[in-house]
Length: 158
Image (tube, helix red, strand yellow):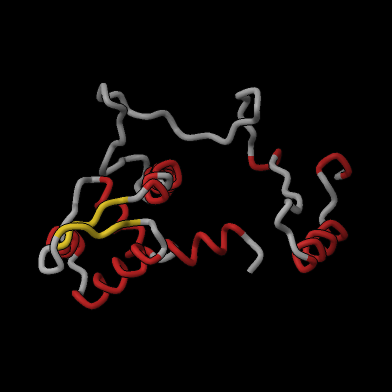
């Protein structure tokens, strides 16, 4: 699909994969550490780690018998997405009683992540706009044209 979200989900879009990445952020490096934390079948864990390495989200080092897995730059760049998803889960799936609190280096809880414009002002969901980008193909342009016919912009709503 000509969609960055679809492409990202292809690499990290199932829940086991995101939990492996979470555990890597928490310091897990060995197969046994991921397996102990997640209770995941060996073949499933092996498959997910293989896919994460192939997608350059994680890298494997060490010996073949005792490999170490770590996040690459591409994997570490997922931190804001994971924190935002966790904060969403804290609010809507955990009744605002977070089982884990994300803090900065000084131990202060992070504020809720927000979408902001270039001036730092928060943009609410109704203020978001999507448009074909420089990598858009003909199908993407057509999809936007079809949606525009059925969804007027907020300025035109009555």
